[in-house]
Image (cartoon, rainbow, N blue to C red; front, side, top):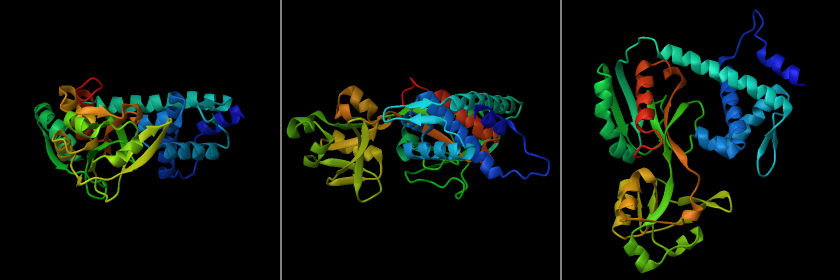
Length: 321
């Protein structure tokens, strides 16, 4: 069994055989997802690393197993284990992914100066608080690149709306985009010390039904996600204020108007200064990521590569994000 899977994987297409490019790209993405699942020993860990949903990761690994006609992973309620044939396949996949990365680095290292106009979309708060201060440095580095930056909090169709790349936060729903994590991302529940003194501390997520919640989002119904007994569970919240901008929700919390759940890149400084305090820390969801994303057809763009590399450098773990 091990030999047959390896041979079929390595076998080149026969003369006259038409390769479906879309299927090839999807298989490559499935290989990348499979390798991440093996490395993390869980679908959840792979999902966090890649910025995808756990369900999508599991679905793609199952599709890969079906295509190969072999079980690659054994699933239990606690962890994943690799089958013998899965281990042999994993070793070949890691080699292939490494070869692709080497090839991309070789292309990037060619003396091609980034130039042209780069259209970028990013969330409003992240853009104003973190992109804005570093943009001048990038413009000094890449003097032949022009930037058009659109800040909004809706999910933008990069291809349909003509963007070269975007910044997205949390789980990525569109796996056709290439993604690189540029910063860690942590959601925290917090409020002002004055609100705590007046209303008391919520001890569990269900206690939020008795508190004023400052909702951040576009939908009329708002759910906040917490880790409860090891599983992520949405908790419906209500309140007198709902905004579509994180900085407004932060300012309302600073004014003592209620509890809010926001990313640390918005409330981190206020928490460090003591103007806001964390609550429900035992129920915080796993750390996710802030991602630079771009369509497949833009991966050869020197300007895209330069800007993504710059963001990874400036917002690496340990940076003040």
